[in-house]
Every structure is written in C-alpha cells, then in structure tokens.
Image (cartoon, rainbow, N blue to C red; front, side, top):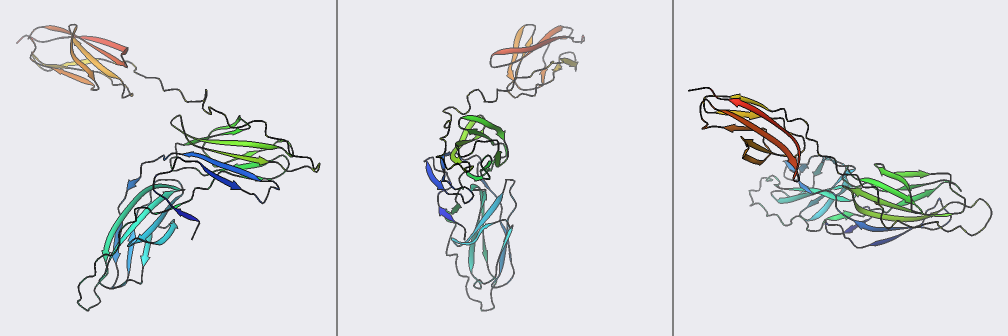
Length: 341
C-alpha cells in the first residue's frame, strides 16, 4: 500500500509544511505547499458488472480523459484495489447468493475527478437460500493519495532540476521564479532544468499553478548547489517569492470580434419578409433590429428576423446593429419592397 491519508474530497486551503532531504545534495532542501484549489468538477461515471459464478464477479469502468488517471475500488466500504491504472476488477472469493456494492473513485495525480458505483449479487450455489443483503456502502471519505510536494535534484555545483506534479486540468500552466526572477513562464511540463548557477549558493524557487489568470496553487523550495571544494559557508538566496506573481503577466481578455454583418433579405409575400445577417463568433455580441428607425428586436443572439402583417406595396428600411457591453461595433441596413396585392 502506498503512503496515503484519509481526507475529504475537497482540498484544504490550510498551509502544509513539508521538509525534504535529497540524497543527491549534501545540504537540506526545504519545500512548502501554500495553497491548493480544485481545478475540475468531479463527474459521475457508469460502472458495469458481470456475475461469473456463486463466488466471482468482475466490474468495469471507463477511462476518464485526465492526466495520469488512477482508480481506487471499494467493496462494501472496504478498499480492495489501490490506485490502479486498470479499468476492471475481478473478485473471485465471494460468498454465494450475496449482495456487494462496488465503488470506484478516480484520481488524476492526487486530485479527485470522478466516481461510480454498482451493486451486484453472486449466483446461487444451488442451496435455494434467500439472498444475503448488501452489508456496506460507498465510503464518504475515500482514501485519497497524498500530494507530493515540489522537489529538486542537485546535479553539480552549477546545475539542478526542479520537479512538480501537474494537476488534472490540462489548461493549467506553471510559472517558476528563482530568487524572485521569472525563469519559466506558462510551462505545461513537470520539471525545469537550471544551469549556469554559482557554486555553493542557495536559491529559492517559487512555483505557481495558474488557471484562467488565477493562481490556484503555490509552492516554494530552497536548494543549495554543490560546493566546488572551498568549504565556505553557502551564499544566501538573493531573493524570495514575489508578492504578486502575476503582475503584468495575466493574459489580456480576447478582443470582441464582430466582422461584417452581411445583411440580406427575402420577400415571402405581399405582407411578409425576413432579413438575415452573419452572426459574430463571440457569444457576447447582441443584435438590435430597426424597421424604418423603430426598434423591433433588441439584444438578440439570432441571425435573422421574420416580419409579417406588413402593408402590401410598401417599402421598408431595416437596420441591424451589433454590439456588446453597450458598445456598437458594426451596423448595416437594407431596403426591401413588398409587392402589391
């Protein structure tokens, strides 16, 4: 069994201090996990089962689309499979004519991302006895893997590497600072190799997990490069973690693109017509329609407007304006004539 702790599905916002000691480095390396925010909404998935005999059942579940996915399996509240990559579990020493509830919990790295359950009864062994009821249920607090902290490997007096676990959301990126200096921005990997450093010098590395321009997790570690033989005391780190790691580094909001409206119209009869326009790709863009200067449709996301009960033989001017947040970005007009009855 791996090192695991009982915990609720929600990550705690409290700080967790973790001390690390690396074999490859002669000096202590310390790390601190400061915050953690869940990045995905856990989903429910279907668990299916096959009853093979009076003592054997196999259950199956789908692979979820997350990084480094693993599954825990419980039978009647007791864990029977631990952090497996498999997509099934065979149970072969069960009691005949007995009910069992299987619960499957999915984790991406250490983050809970989904669950499913199924109840199955083993086959009768010929005794004709009544079925034994299910005696357990899904645990309210499944065993959840411990999140490994940021770590480091010191290779020489001038080179080291920082490692971290990626979370379940593939859109999360990682910013790494060395002594308050940004050395890696918007990384999607799980490590950073740093070289050209000074011997026997302490460096503070600060890692920030960023999702949607928001820091969802932060960690820090202090690492000392190897001595080059001088025997002197290590030089202290030149900086600490930045107070605002996203200052000047947030992605700007994408501009609202409207494009030409390309207004057109079709006359259906002597009193009905319809106008059409090209909708903008942004869902924020809304359309207003005017007939002879009078507003007849407001704040619409549609791409057309049907107008009926008009006066035969009349000519109408239709105008369409596209805007968002109170600003008009594009407009067009068209004149349509109705035939005489």
